[in-house]
Image (cartoon, rainbow, N blue to C red; front, side, top):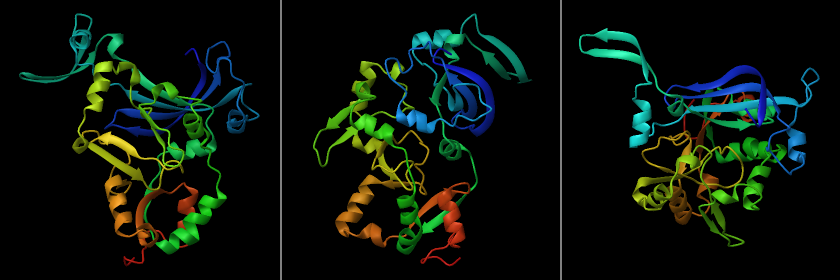
Length: 296
């Protein structure tokens, strides 16, 4: 694998048939001969993240792999690779003129996009493990008594965000930057955007997308606690863009313009997974599924 040597596959943390994706916990170690982190010393963050269990091999750590089948390449070259003399078919079912087959095209069209978190902490494993959840109706009182103390007492590693803001990492992918010291921001593509297959023409087309085709929203609760906005095309049903996870940017702006302390007064609903500390705190307070506005 070049950058990593995978020691052992662990458990499946999450699988999604709709997006054809899989999240796996594995054991891995860095290939010191690779160019990964070339010219860099191991960062303090890496050292902190490393679990270094006694029964692990030297340098072995937890890794999380996000595997996703890549979209079909629909240009003439891609279609030629998909349907060619090298494509083999295994019949699964046949009824008159209708047949279902398992198709095995060339290796070139069988790639799986892989994103790796390494080393992965217990918090990462908890975050990406699929667990049942509950809808929590967070009243202003709940925020003051449960959510805010939790946030103040927790440690969240967002050094990767500051690496981007300080242009230590991913600066070559910046789409737009407003350098204002107070209101500035950086627009950056998501990791799930396949940059390798994005041509200059596609980028130009991307800039030409009308605002009426864009969904812009905040997550609540967010995946990390540094103010950020998600932008995606309305054709893309992104994770967390449903009614229980997303708050439209336009709605948030309008609500604050209408009443500056709107969100200090508003009951906010969000889904909390059972394995999270925040869920445990709400359960201890007997606030799961309860709200000042709703009868339990």
